[in-house]
Image (cartoon, rainbow, N blue to C red; front, side, top):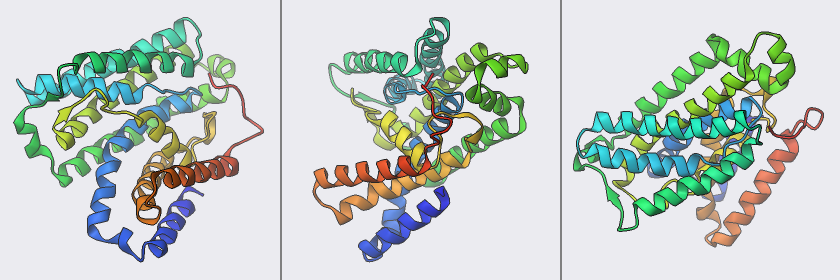
Length: 297
């Protein structure tokens, strides 16, 4: 269904835009929106597989982008490492409160979303934070494609050829049964949130080389974009065994096509939002598994 949906969407918008959506310039612009979204979606994919949600990824991207921008003035490599460490710490913060105090994941991450966003606003009070001028030289399509491919490939191998993937699906399908089968749900869930934050911290490198400087609104709405992209890609909201790695790839591509095509067909912003909402509702209605639907952890 995600593949059919993606192909169908491209076909429909190709007709509606008289083929403009397929010209090289528009394809390049669509791809420029995919890199950060696809990388960050990998971490949220793992979180959703265990049955959770994460609404803090946008603010994590903003805060780690600030960290990278500041440290990059001394060393770009150290900036990437510092951003990944900062992201891991923020993800661990989410995981700790979710696991230790048994607070629903969406409640924890909504709270930390405001906390991290507040820190972004505070750190950028006196104006945007500029990265080293050298980062501009890394804004090359081939490099962003290569880095995104490497991250996605590592994620694919880890989820499909290590125990991690089996544990994630088992926990998402049923935490009690997973525990009796040898999984450690609490530890695995905590590590998943930590890794998700670290992955988004890496994505901040691509985000910064694209924009050059960071404001307090950096990463705004990313969490919503990730959730919509994964659902468009066929990701079951409750996680579990039906989660497929292809949900990340086709979801990010479908969302990017939708985001780029709508302004060409509907110039009014309000109409674009209306169409997005209708498409999202239709996809959820068609793909949601009502038999296994349960409260999000």
